[in-house]
Amino acid sequence: MAQGSSRPPKSGGRLRVVVSAAVLVLGVGFLAYAWTSDDGGHHPTPRSGVTAENVMPAVRYAEVPRIEKVYREVSGVPAAVDGIYCYCHCMENMEHRSLLTCFESDHAAGCDVCLSEGDMVYRMTQQGRSLDQIRQAIDRTFSS
Image 1: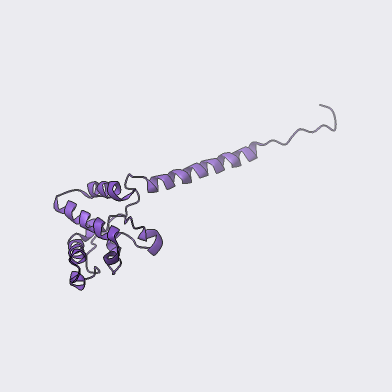
Image 2: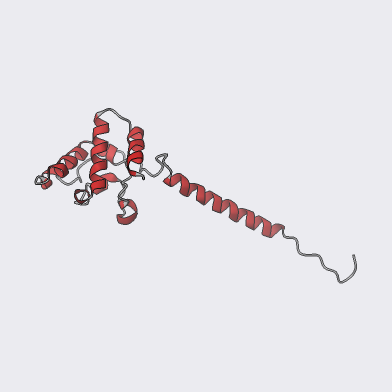
């Protein structure tokens, strides 16, 4: 090789950085997809020993029979309701933990999605359906 000619610097270091960045982007993309896919990954894990002690009393809504009924139902199945994602998107917008959180205030009383999901969880629990079956039904009904 003649004096004064130079070779381009080795790009192995840059290639590793580009490959690492691509792997990171793909990994984050996969996690985002898995979180929002219909496999139930977006549903919270029910808390051990969760109770209905913080659910608003159903009698508070006595003037509106549907609301009173669903608050009463949710009080009977708090563990199941605590394992359900609420499709009114209150997790993202109001920092709710689960569908159960919606019933720990007046929020669900003014939200048809919360009431419909709560009623569905109760009915399916009474039919002996598993939490996974309930989640799949909720996703089919409310995700679109």
